[in-house]
Length: 241
Image (cartoon, rainbow, N blue to C red; front, side, top):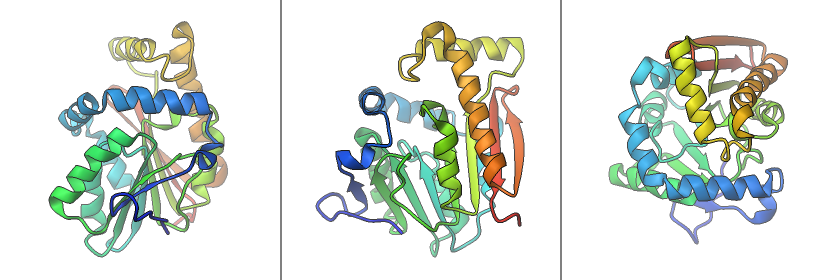
């Protein structure tokens, strides 16, 4: 179920500031500003790297979607995952992309309208306070490390869906890959709301918290590693099937 606001785009809803109270307001503003500023570059980068290491395909496979399913992607950004998700659920299914950054959603909306995908909805909202309920699957790629309390957020997602898949950076790879990840987190420490010297450790902690949430709320959890072990996909099945 998705609430929509006809005052905006036909498939886009804007939530009030009160709806975002579960998210640190300053962190939310920082994410909106930083990701909004770099939306065009991020869109290009995300599409150019979509198939590297098989991460995106691995996420979709882990969701185990069937035709007719409803899948929600938290932190959908410019909609890079939308085509693959839509193919998996078919025209009779539904894809809901949720992001807190307007410019990102605008680019995703352009993609949706270009293909006239009537079964794709885009919602401007805070993933820590989901505006959806009773869906089949939830996906979040490289999003949970932005939350101050990823355990609580992922736990909430497990109440919404039978399948929850979370892809995160994990500083467990080989020396070269880990050095690149360290450089990335150091450059983006402000966005992750972490001290520059401790960004990698915080990334590791929040990745582990996401995994614990799935372990505590799902009947079974599978873990898959990609890109020299620097990307981890945790797939939880709440129904255990």
